[in-house]
Image (cartoon, rainbow, N blue to C red; front, side):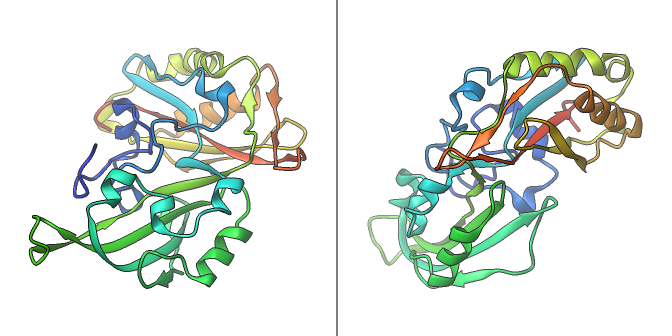
Length: 268
């Protein structure tokens, strides 16, 4: 269990290798482990192939931006404890405020919705209810923590779980995540084998699986600072063989879903 004040430098999954991938965006990263974080992907087809592939020092991953939460789960959530780890929540003595904000292009949106105490406000609930799939958002709870059994000994603290709204059934590559990563790994090898970590940053490419199972809207969200490698990643996605199973909502209707391809060298 991570302590409240330990900053998680990475996506909200339990593998340490991936944590470093997002270390340059600490302004949007969680401060504590989110609820059910060990089960990070709601789609079993993706979960079964969850792994990282090293390629001449490079790491690759395919996932949602943050910890996924289904709309059916989101609609049941009424307070901060519905999003955060129960063991950490028990340490909270008194809530001060609860802030909700979208994460757009790796940054927190300027518009924030703020409530008093642990309960989501009507405005926050409405925002979550109407958020489209693949919305990335952050909740921030500011609170007082009891440092000892003497509740007069209080200290300020805060918690910031980050989540991505996903369909009831997520999109997945029919050949499996392992095959997807292997294809990217091998296709990028002529370039990645020649790069030095001093010249690179951790990178992310966002792309959407459409209702027809075709990749669309592929874009570089965070550049690795190698234009050649970023362009190669986009080209590999555009020419990916095989098929995708489309995402489906609670009614079984096909919907779009955004996924993220992450890649970097250790130390980036």
